[in-house]
Length: 468
Image (cartoon, rainbow, N blue to C red; front, side, top):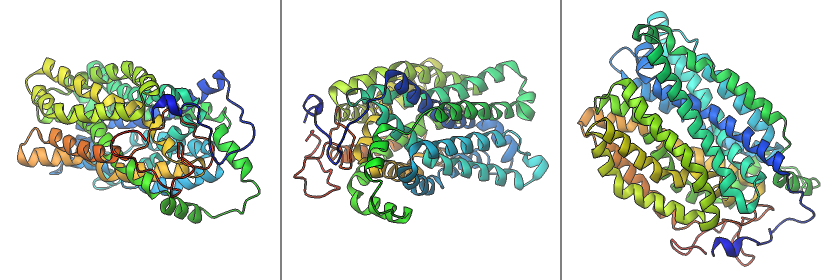
């Protein structure tokens, strides 16, 4: 089924009038979602860009960079728990309330990293406190990302969900790029000694005002009309516990959960390899300076930011699946050549990284359009948060740690490319079962785009790689 054929399908499981948000309200919803997501990814960008200083401050012993990458990966341990808790709450009480809490927790815990004592002052307590704050960040992110994507998708017009949803990922790249750029500027403005002693703290402290701005924007909006509509229709229904809602999600919608799980393996291995691990890889493996590695990544991020709205809009016309196929096949074919090229010098590193970044953009640009549309409204937040965060915790967030451990112990500099290729294979298998939902309404209590004669509520299996 092509996007054009699905464009005017009537939603199932919904009755009554539907008030379409005004363009001004849609813009506010997009801004509120994007800035919260930018705050989340600003932390990851700063953490990756300050990895050398964090290693010196918290892991000066034998663990070294492995300890710092462990600090990065550990934040993903509680992401699934966050998804299991925040998701059902968001489906029951509303997206807005959960997103207000998560952005506060993320910004406060990030800012607190900037005031932690170092290993030289507090001994073993220094890395313990760092890891504890990373765990809080992970738990909060377990509800933040799925909620923001769901919120944005439910506010967007069906025919423009790709276009508007891409701005959430613009926030992702803006947060990452801002963190990287700020650390680069500070490296140029401060002496090396100043950066090692106190300069690295400042970027973390700036997360607090970012969080306050995001909280203010989100407080100005009502919950999405799609959620409000279903909530009003269910007002007289028997109230169920969060555990019952969670069990319903897992038992009745396990198919889309598994499909999304596989797609997220590819998505986030690419994401955390290219955006989080790359500065450390270029420094330790290729031998670039801290600043040169940051410049390579920053140039790639800026190019990706410029292109992401165009790919989002393109997906509204061509569908989500063709975009994903192009991205996954391209990354599989070109990862090894581009990683080899990055080892040939600074200019080649920029070229290779930009090529891989452009190939990755079709996935990143369509997250908010693709994943929320895999679930009906009453379990959308939970289904997204659970599948996304479990997959990310197992594969995406651990990618920098796995890459660093293998490269440092074996000397195999091309391992990140091979790891990325393996993730793409998993993504392609999952993608072959995805139903095309470009232009399909996500209103109501049935899976978007599902025909009335589908055999089971959770049926999402497609006929091979082609649209149904």
